[in-house]
Length: 449
Image (cartoon, rainbow, N blue to C red; front, side, top):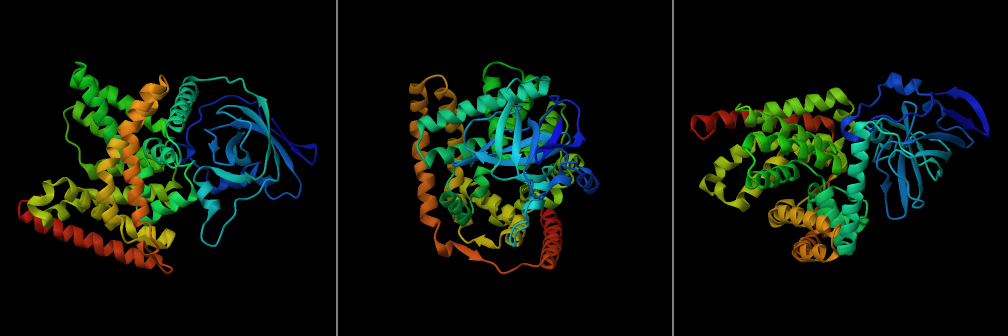
């Protein structure tokens, strides 16, 4: 493989392009060390004055937006993020040539884009790239073959959603069911942020629990033994996580769910916080940069810690009302935000004042939107009539969802926070940890825990 600079080869060669396993870098592929970054031949070409032509292979699902698309192009051991026109359409594993100015990702005043991409192993970007297809013939190994077929299925399901629903309903369903917000307008995204509901479109533990529950009920109803159902559910968990693109929150939930499934299958008890630590260790061993640069990873684990340690305390103070479904949602929301809110304030500089109310109003509908939305898109790939049939109740739920978004996404619903010092975060989490430990001991003495 060759690099071309100002129309001539500059002497850096790689072996002939060979297909290899390609996984979603944000969650399961290791990011390079600083040494690897400095030694990357592609990285050394960043910010050159002229245009550069690079030949590589699309290593992940193209990120298609309303007016453009982003391609992760693997060149040797490096990945370049190339932004180009919406058409023509490119696919995972296509061999392409990208031509344009190679740049180091920018660092903005309020957002470090360089670090954001570094966690994915991306150290070079090419804006307004000219992309030419070199070869659309794909050579596979087992994993790349399976992943490509999963992406084809995902595209068919999302297309079925677009046929059954118009905007913004289609983008809401695609976000909740498939974790895909690429078609969501900035106005709708701002409403999600203002109401504290952004987590609804980030596939996480709730989605994985719903998938496990659906699969287990179906398999047991079909006459499978429980032990058989556990192992089949394990396969479907990771199929779904691959379908939604391996986001860090879903991978964390998938690891925890997998451990819980095998523990039940083997008749062993498992401790939630130990399983969470194991999940974090596995992910960080694979990609240590998630800890510093992936806000989704940070918030997912902090929220899980809050639910594991703070929710029983909140349940104690709610007393017998903890059996109430809506009160349970409040308990989960408060405990998750108790641990995650400081990082949200530190990172984004805002906090939603209505998130508790909106979560109580919306979360009961989310499992039904997820299940019916999936059934609608799955049925729609076979029959427009069946897709339309399932779309009716889904549409009503999404209308309700949008009513809540519109009602509570007001300027007064968001509090802008001045610059938050990391020192404040240290004191906050130290105080919360001490309070949780003391309250757990107190409640345990009351025989509640």
